[in-house]
Length: 158
Image 1 (cartoon, rainbow, N blue to C red):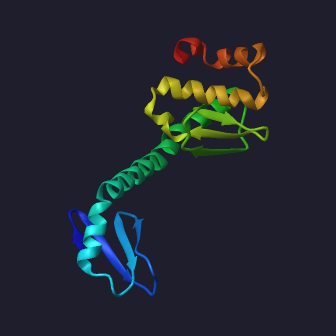
Image 2: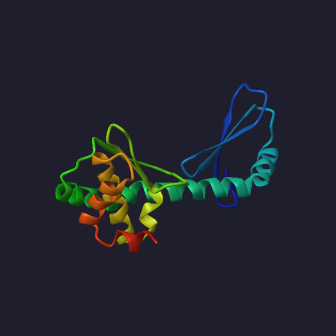
């Protein structure tokens, strides 16, 4: 069934309520045999804006999942070789508060949204997190290491 620009699949089940789920770009409505198609249409239209927003959000996240590793991992490889510091693992997350982090086990986690920044800033974040493999703090020797491999880090941080 097509409702506006949404492809809606109706699954009839022996259930009491009506449920709406989004799978890929398709809307799935689960309901019992007694609920009419008109009621389903009204139900989907009532939630139309929320459905569209969720689909857009998923597409946006798919973009970041596909592109962040392609952009960031070559930079990590480059600076790991230069610095002689290699993470035990690299992963990505959607974060709000920081661009990257390094665990006590040298697992580096990058924010997917980092790819929205300038290449120079991405390089700084990579060097910063790699430096945490050697120094788990922000004391003088940490910043000296960052500066050795990224001399203009203070300007880029601003």
